[in-house]
View: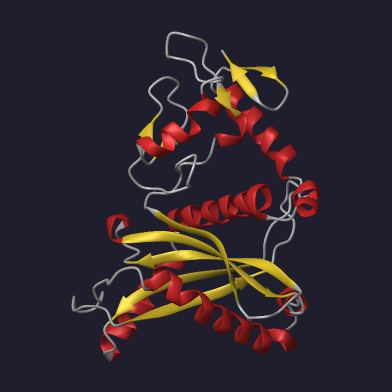
Length: 268
């Protein structure tokens, strides 16, 4: 769950009336009240939900979100967005790790390489993964110091286990972003601790529960981009508004709610 206004995650406060939206502070709640009060219903009144604010709560750990795209190559005029996302910290403990997602603007010419899955393009693709990781890493790892998972000393570096995925349309027909999925595990630089970090990253990739968290984070990142950040023509043709409406219909019906306004409000 994220703050409705600033998208922060972590400790949030629910609206005391409808219990359907959350905020990180009273300031954000006050900012949203003028728009929210028209659909907010107290518990003794019909339950009303804003269809486009129901989000998955699969994440078991906090999520760092940076919605300001980072330029991969300064001065490049023809760019496309990719989503750099994953897990940072100790993957074994949700309280000692976090999910993250940031957007990187890469040259549009990179897309042909990202899309090409033939063996001959493997080296070029891996070079791009390494380059994107170098671009994203300062934003991801510089916010706090984490202990080495091998010995407990302060971590001085991270082992990045990054992989590339190319997806432009989901199974439901909505636009998606190419992505890099990175597992960043802290270590102190000692060989034995580095091996431990690599081992933990590999185990993380094999964990179905963590994968579900990470994939949900990726889908929410695509949603945010195409609903909030993309250019108007891209938003219009992304398919996100339509598909979100369908998903909300299924979730709302499971809660015993009925449609009262097309793709916007539901009540019991």
